[in-house]
Length: 366
Ligand SMILES: Cc1cc2nc3c(=O)[nH]c(=O)nc-3n(C[C@H](O)[C@H](O)[C@H](O)COP(=O)(O)OP(=O)(O)OC[C@H]3O[C@@H](n4cnc5c(N)ncnc54)[C@H](O)[C@@H]3O)c2cc1C
Image (cartoon, rainbow, N blue to C red; front, side, top):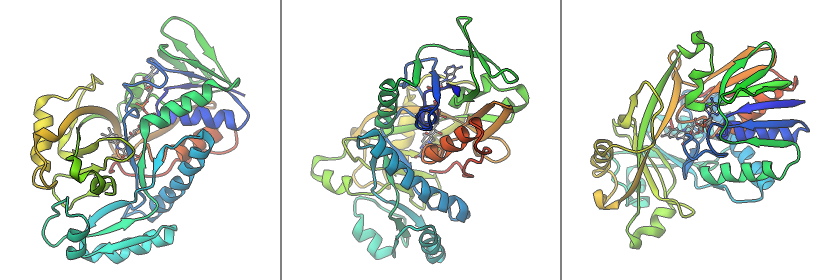
């Protein structure tokens, strides 16, 4: 079969690799480069963590995703995953439940009371009395390396054709055809739309209207040289127990310390550039100065904004079957990257007629 994939972010690239791996042909189109440095996926790090305290199925699926990433790393032949664990500050009453859920899903988990938490991570000032769980099968996905490795792998394959700098302007769901801005029409046995935050332009209005576009700022920091070893041994922290929804990705494998918070997300009407306005940079420094010991504006070496969609009714992603041979996946913030190998497999299975679209259920939290 010949499948056209629109979008060279993590969903499109992993789907293209899956298509070729299952013995089919793929044509991958992106409006920018492949990979596109302006895509949401093109960043230094993304986090995979399993614990979804209110959702045992998502927790189990995320542990499966961890194993899939390790498999993909072997296929790509390059290091793209640092299994650094993931730390979550939780109310003391939730700790044993979290540990049980992780253990049922196949992951180890270590519990910290207030004293051991403060002693193990002195570089972070957790709110007084905080307790936490550290999960084992979690860590940092080296996002840009993943995208580059997938694009390189596809370029080596005679079953893949990459078409960078070509914009899809219309999809014919009945005919499985994609019209490009230059007038060329790509016909296929199946079409996957993986256009990320730009998905609304290609979806029918009734589906596009269900999606809300968000923009989020992140700051990138260099930690003081004397603390580098401590910081590179720090796990991603999904929540500090603070009300701003703050999270942290540690500086592993040459990446910077990355900080962001739910308070740095806002609803916008269109995808713009990835520059971070000074207001949001300052806002994040203000949010993290009380939490990260010693942090001030001097630590900040860069900042980046990224865009994501969320389904109005659920806050999560939207997968849609548009016709017998056309599917779309509009990724959400927080968790579509970590589930990408499973999402890609499910979408491709549907297109090659080997399954129905059943992507992991998940919520837009890191
Ligand atoms: C701040 C932030 C932090 C996040 N953290 C995490 C995390 O820690 N863990 C996690 O699992 N997830 C996280 N996510 C979510 C995750 O990064 C995204 O859901 C995921 O990267 C989206 O991938 P994608 O391939 O769907 O979209 P993208 O990466 O945006 O790729 C879409 C591609 O489609 C192309 N395109 C669009 N329209 C067209 C067109 N008409 N024609 C041709 N090409 C087109 C674009 O150029 C782009 O290259 C985070 C998101 C944000 C914003």
